[in-house]
Every structure is written in structure tokens, then in C-alpha cells.
Image (cartoon, rainbow, N blue to C red; front, side):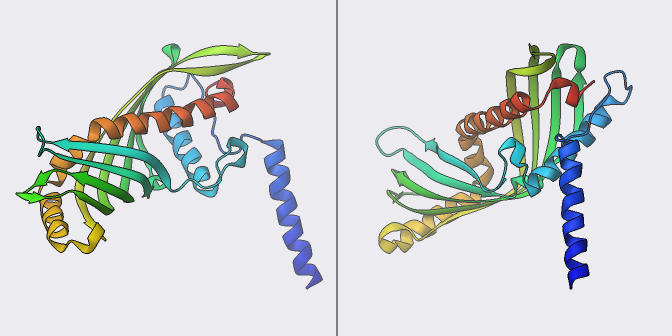
Length: 247
């Protein structure tokens, strides 16, 4: 038993010593004169993602999921009977299973484009709606769920370097993104007042028009996602010197 404890303590001490010697253990460095630098950057990004799933306390990342979005809304039709819905307290799971499938870069101008793939995202939210949908007065609220499969995303980043002491860091100048979803299943449940007519009408409409509904959600959703991505990238840039990424 004493021998087992000694082995466990030794392993923990060795891991701690390794991290202490390399505080940026969660990142792989790339060389700017490498002709295959984009391949290296892709590997480095995926290595970072793999470490994020386990948590990176040095970056303040402990629980990578769920991703939480405060609110998004959609509007279908106009006039007093136009359908309006808002989705609040959105919790999304599965985003940490992201894979960076491609990178394009211009290191001299600090521009990067990442192509990302997520197999599946599951989301839950509270919703409230008003107006008419499929000739049914659909005012009310309840719980929303969504299953999104085959998500492809492109993220563009432009940065500029600045110096802090003897080391250079990056400052985010611009970030843009777009995404598509191959398959979507969505629905509502536990509709207020137990109105089965409204719930059936909503679920029929939602699943018959899932891609169109996503199209309506997309502008608001992109704004929220860009804010989350901006905060994430700015946190990375503030804590990781540029030459730790690319030397």
C-alpha cells in the first residue's frame, strides 16, 4: 500500500514539475518560416482544444461546457399577428467536441482563418412567443430543445502585435464568423397552461421549417457567438505571448 502511494505521489509530482517547467503546456509552437505553417497551426489549435476539454486553469477555463447565451429572438411576418419568439438562458452542449479542420494564414499581416467542425450540439432554453402561427394563436411559453448535427464554421481573425516589457503580444483587431448546419431537429415541450394544440402546432411548424427558422435566428445568434469568441480570443492573446504561438 505504501509503495502504491509512493508511485501515485511520484506521478503527481512529475506532472506538476513538467507543467511548472512549461507553463504553456497546452500550446504547441509553430515556426513562421515553416513552409507548412498552416498544418502546424491546425495541430496547435487542436492541441489547445484537447487541453480545454480537461480545463486550463491558467486561462481561467475550468468547465468548457455548457456554452451559455442569454437570449436570441426571431420574427416571422409583420403586423399585429406576426409571430415573435424569444429564447432565453440557452445552454448548449457539444461545442467542446470541435475539430479544427483547416487553417489559412498570413503571418506577416497577422490574419488567420480557421475552418471548424462540430459533430453535434444539443441546446435547451426557455422560450416565450406571441402572434399567430399556422392559423393558431401561439402566444405563450415553455421549454425549447434543439439537436444540431454537422456544424461547419469559418472564423476569421485579424490581429496586431504590441509589446509588454521584452515580449510581444497580440491585440485582436477584427473577428468574423459564419456557420452552417446539416441536420436540425427542434421542438418545444411543457408549454404553459398545458396547451396541447399550441404545442402540436409549434412542433409541426418547427420541424417542417427548421432550416428557415435557423436562417431567421442566424443574425442574432452570430452576434452573440462573435461576442463569446471575441472574449475567448482576447483572453488567449492577453495571457500568451506571440512568440509562444509563432516564433
